[in-house]
Amino acid sequence: MSEQLDLREAIRVDSRRNLFKVSRRNFVEPDILRLEGKQIFDRCWLYLGHTSEIGEPGDFVTRVVAGRPIIFTRDNDGELHALFNTCPHRGAQVCRERQGNSKAFQCFYHGWTFAQNGALRGQPGKESYADGFNNDGGGNMVHVPRFEIYRDFAFVCFDAGAASLRDYLADAREYLDLVADQSEVAMTIVGGTQEYSIRANWKLLTENSIDGYHAATTHATYLDYLKESTGSLAKVPINGIGKDLGNGHAVVEYSAPWGRPVAQWIPLWGEEGKREVDAIHQRLIERFGKERADRIAYRNRNLLIFPNLVINDVMAITVRTYYPTAPDLMQVNAWAIAPVEESEWARKFRLHNFLEFLGPGGFATPDDVEALEHCQRGFQNVKEAQWNDISKGMGRETPSFDDEVQMRAFWSHWNEQMLAPAEA
Amino acid sequence: MAAPHSITRPEVEDFLYFEAELLDDWRLEEWLTLFTDDAHYYVPSTDLAADASPDNSLFYIADDRFRLESRVTRLLKRTAHSEFPRSKTRHLISNVRIRERLADGLIVGTAFITYRSKDNVTDVFIGSTRYHLVTEGEGLKIAEKRCVLDLDGLRPQGRISILL
Image (cartoon, rainbow over all chains, first blue to last red):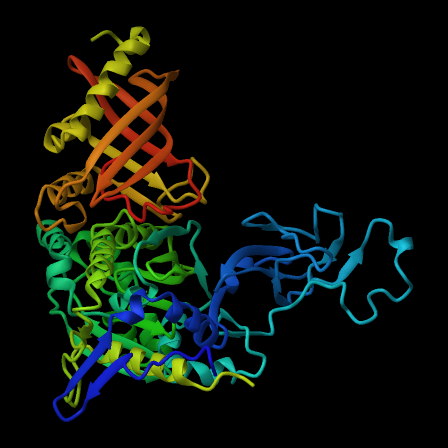
């Protein structure tokens, strides 16, 4: 295959010496980005959205997934659809709103109209078309080849022959369950999207999102802030494990001293807060038994679903996905997700917690952005300084949360995908 | 300083230009003194209504006085990596209008453009600010500052590590 790059030197693994190196070419070369498009983004299951975002019949949101504009919509029968947002007539984007509720979609260019499921309903001047014009469905909006949902998280895949989402998720399912189980009704995306870009390769954010090693230095000011705010800390050490979940997915799971709306109380939340957090914890015990309840309540999880979905269940829960638009530029969308039934009090503290750490205005994420952008700048030395090292904890039986087994899981799978035979 | 009903627009403008100067000079502790003890500073996410509440919607920034002070403390440290070395900023304020006179102060609307330069990259933040100003002692103080960005997201700015 002529377009196949020589990727033998994309990663270098020396199991005898417990060394794992990643070539910095992977972060800078346009040819590699192009190949990622074919080998990864055209083949993997990619996050589209959460079903709570289109809760009512007729609801829709539009977004871009791996460069494709898509409409995520719920029809009047409650069925969900993922449609390519392009008119079958001459290609214009049919829907130009971010979100809304509609009985039908109309392309403004020539006025074709479509049902909520994308079926052609009307064409101005229909009498000029031959009878049976749409008999083969060629006048309907095109559905994304694969569209499946796991616990209200909706994914698309552009490879019609891909394995099921369930199989794809592998051991990551258990971690999506630990998020979904936090509600007895349903989890819901809270209004407001944090949209930003980072001038860095997209894989830097994958690595950073599951990196427990950088917190003490990169986030020194956040940790100072927690120490300086009276009552912001539970008496809990930062301690835990890193884990390879198969298919390139990975997680770090750990205890930490910050407050968790579900359900780790901190003194700052007062006696009223304690009653509420205790009640949430008690319900978890009733539903799942003490061991699983404690795991949900007291452990934090930074989860990567290969290649680009991150769900961090920390002082709040963020759902974050991102795409490259150039080797050194990515576009990030991040949301907050919460139990739909939680009280106003809990929602308020959850969002307060969220903004303390997370997002472009938080006390931590801007420093991550700075780190990623300066990695990308450092990679300009790729010709003479070619290798990243992610060997930390290699050879350990149980890797710690601040080891790098998560990145190794990602890169090993990335390398396999990049080398997989192209389709005939 | 006159009572709220007789404060003029030039007086408000002087106050806001002074605020901008403090920010551009990185005199952040002095800047904090312009705020009341129960002040709030908000930057809603760009897909929210301008009057959305941070209690039930995800913002970029929603600081009470304590977190605003913490933001300043953080920004003055070398370990606030996103602002080390410090960026150069220029806050431009225009279209200043007194929109409402309240018993304790004023609601003021402004348009702003803020430039941030660091590491050979210049980013621009565009938007409007709604101030709730109150009279306190001899001068004005900011009880609430809400910056609503006229952007579709922080692209390419990526972060709001400076104060808008």
